[in-house]
Image (cartoon, rainbow, N blue to C red; front, side, top):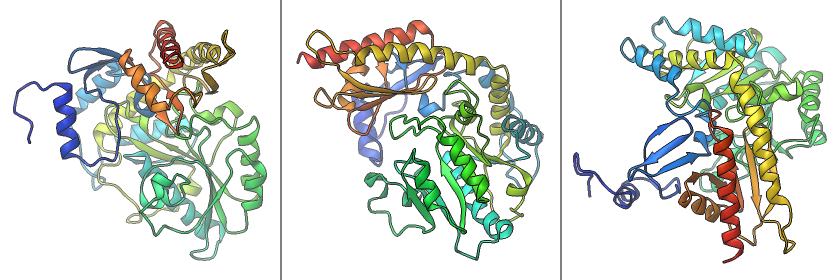
Length: 417
């Protein structure tokens, strides 16, 4: 079966066709979207939904942000790709401005978040051999339990998620997995051949897990004391999501490498990057790493627009203030009602990012997400009975209040079924 040309298809028809002709590596909610603006999306039947996922933080600045779209349209009419074999007029401005945003000397632009993580791993190993003096092929990198850094073969090799790992071995050696949030676990794992600690300042896929206060500061001290690079994967947590430009900023921690993606592309094109000082990124020489599309003109133009938006501080402030409102409303659902039952076990997060643990006796996260969809709210489940909420930062307080009302209504319905 093929899609008929220029003939409108229903949600059911489009879902059936897509499932029959694509690999089933995702299990999306049964909604087919056609257009979007700000924090709202519209399906093929014309029903509107509040987007409370924002493309896993890719859409921090909203769907169709005027400044980002204008930059993309202008660049589309001029030049979209040169490859890195040639220079273009957007590149120098982009890498310079992004380096300044990160407080670093240099930027290496890539496309996807996983590519940026792979880049950071390669750079850390090469730095370890050429600068730290680690014996050849002996470098190790410390990573965290329940991490999510992408789905390439190397990355899933140090995942603790059976679905991510199962059936994809053999895996790349050189990684030590320790408990997230445990300073002592990192301290015990470090040895003379450790070149980096790779960490998410907040673990998004694991359910928006925020580490204990002082954890990042202590990790920074361990890395500094042992000549080890601290690599912060800020792909989901960075660029305004948590109420600061970077999640590391909440503890005043400066990593040796920032790994960025998602929101850097403004929800328009895939843009990722590694930012670090010259003594780290400078270990790479021509021919040792690259990407045909990395740092392309369209990506750089969009990235420049994103950096300008962050430069105003407006989005960081909105995420901080709206996040306080969202978390206060969500915590109301953890208070037991007349029957002594609280439908929400816990609420975690920072800024406009929340993980909500539903009582598993009530429903799975998938069931809650499907019920929310029917009420016009799009959210995503993770790990059993947890749902994640991360709306675009352009969302309004009224929209957020309405979304929490819908969640409360869904939980009441489930409790009474």
